[in-house]
Image (tube, rainbow, N blue to C red; front, side):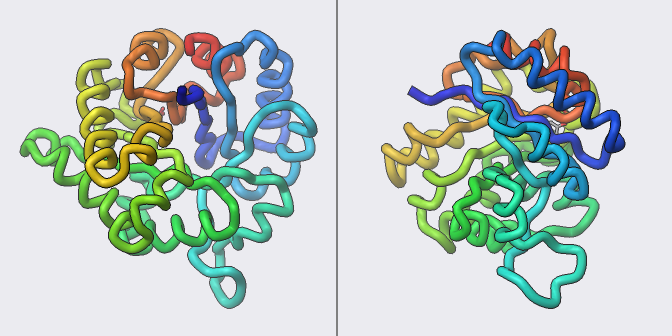
Length: 249
Ligand code: PEP
């Protein structure tokens, strides 16, 4: 039985004081979230403070990036060992904003994935098609290619050590959510592709949906058989909304 995970991607939002208020608000309401694990991914500079505020509360902590190298001359990057010093157990990898705005290739994403796994940090591995790709009918080809970048370099077993986030790019930050049927269809395709290679990996891996998930649409999306949680952008920035998604699980 796969556990539901609701992870908040705070992106480049907030300030020290607003994010302190946010994490404290999440902590206060956490006892009412019965059927999901919760995690937050703050901007890197706030990770130490958020880690401190999480303390021993049961909230996962993730970074929004992780370097594909262990240390050295990689200006602007975050070493896995640094993230571990602040108890980060997740790292978002392959988010569409990194792929499209910062030209991250499938190959670089796969290298970041490998370094996270090697370091004991769970990749939140984002995949998904653009609107043009969906309209051209190549959604399955796109998510397959993105998955293959990891499978072909690290083997299918590596996927057992990550959380996949299917995030149709056209639904991210647009208010246009994929319908539960559209999302389920792609989630089932992803799980089926993995099952063709290794059924136990396919059964185990959590596949989250991301793209304008909110308190109003979460319950229906999360009730789909292959949707194991959500990666939440905008709606993770208010404790009450984020907690409502957790409670919908
Ligand atoms: C995201 O960026 O991962 C995301 C899902 O954003 P939003 O919920 O705002 O669409």
